[in-house]
Image 1 (cartoon, rainbow, N blue to C red):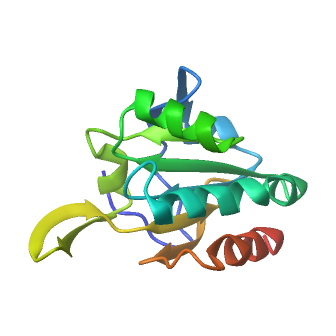
Image 2: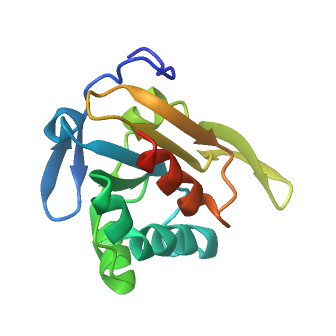
Amino acid sequence: MPAIEVNQPVTDFEVAATGDQTIRLSDFRGRNVVLYFYPKDNTPGCTTEGQDFRDRMAEFEACDTVILGASRDGLKAHENFRAKHGFPFHLISDKDEALCNLFEVIKLKKLYGKEYLGIDRSTFLIDRDGILRRQWRGVKVKGHADEVLEAARNL
């Protein structure tokens, strides 16, 4: 699949998600979509990021915007993470990294001096017509959900 670019259509995708769902981007035609990638369920930054999106859910809905979180964790871990924190949006399991590769979010990272390939925290705002309008890479969690909300309001 080709890489995505701002102001270009996003290739339709089909992925497994919580709630025993198969989600396709085309399912959301007519609504904006926030797709945020995070490294791992139940880690401090990822939990805070999910909670920030959760806490602004009504405001996102008011501007006709769906939120989807994605990581390489499995569906069982996602279901537990979602239930534990009351996330009203679905989480995508991308164990095969197909979606991660489409959005080019797998990067070489370092932890305790060891290098590994992991998800670079990133968010993508896709408009009602399936066009990528904004992207945030190397996201810092604090204030991020507010910035994404503002961008969604301006679509």
